[in-house]
Amino acid sequence: MALNVKVEKALNEQINKEFWSSYLYLSMANYLADQGFAGASNWMRVQFEEEQFHALRMIDYVNERNGRVILKPIKEVPATWDSLLAVFKSALEHEESITASINTCMDIAMEARDHAAAHFLQWFVNEQVEEEANVTTIVDNLLMVGETGNGVYMIDKELATRVFVAPVITN
Ligand code: OFO
Image 1 (cartoon, rainbow, N blue to C red):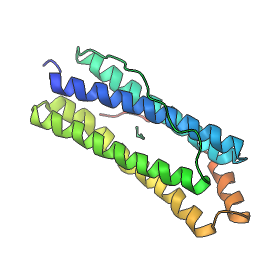
Image 2 (image 1 turned 120 degrees about the vertical axis):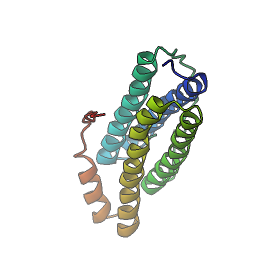
Image 3 (image 1 turned 45 degrees about the vertical axis):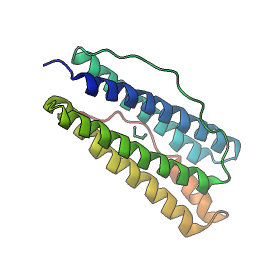
Image 4 (image 1 turned 60 degrees about the vertical axis):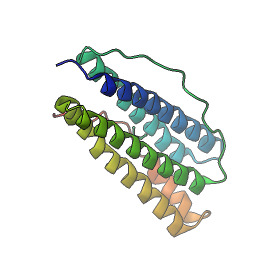
């Protein structure tokens, strides 16, 4: 069954958002590197890779369904934040907005009765739960230790250990 036209449009918009997300996280990585948070910068760089993976997964899906991917320009992203905590709070807000737009894609797929697309999008619905949980944990930890001193040093060290591992897709 051909990809529903409305679903195709929604996925194209979401692909742009995933690339925008990747660009946002790369910008955060650069800001954090400049501020001396090498570990947090690494974490954001891995997040940049995650977002590229999301965009490419959607691109592959649209192509697989004989749809058409049209890449649009990526809007400018912010370049500075007020603090380490502000960066992660803004990442959390961003992920919440992405969750809402993934849910909209799902609504469109369900309204179009495109069950295959809805099944595909379920992976992203689950992924968003994880995305929000990961950032929430970091925000909570930063709030717990305060903005300076040993605690932040330890958190930054922990964030340095993150590496990108492409998710294994089983469905
Ligand atoms: Fe692609 O999940 Fe974040 O934005």
